[in-house]
Image (tube, rainbow, N blue to C red; front, side, top):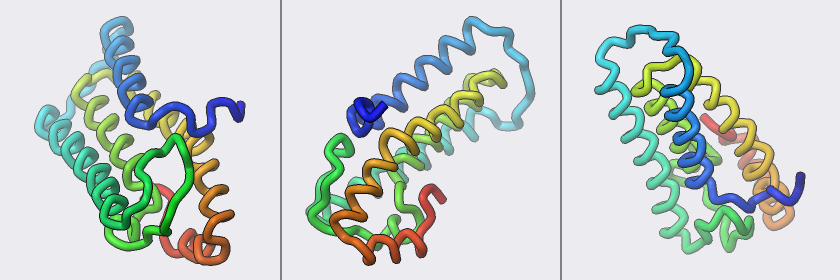
Length: 152
């Protein structure tokens, strides 16, 4: 389905999956389990995810390159800051926020959406970006891929 590649903004994917998680938590049996300090843990994860994603955006802005993930093109290869740890901190931030949301909802079924997010982002966002970056930066990008992990 190349028609979906880089078409849906990842924040919208996070929002849609978050809504589906909420709907499922209301419609399905709770499969209740206890998480100590659940609300605090959820808040910390959502904030950590948000800050991780924002740090990726800020780093891109400082490098004067595009932050629009629906058009995978770049004026420079960013490998410093949070990008020294993860090639995709914005997507990692989205995943971390969804994990916090799943913990807050306290329904085991909502955790099934986490791999859905990863699979979708890997296929329809990261794969086209990696092709574009390899085309633009060649061996420099390949060397960066060897140094920094895709997610974490």
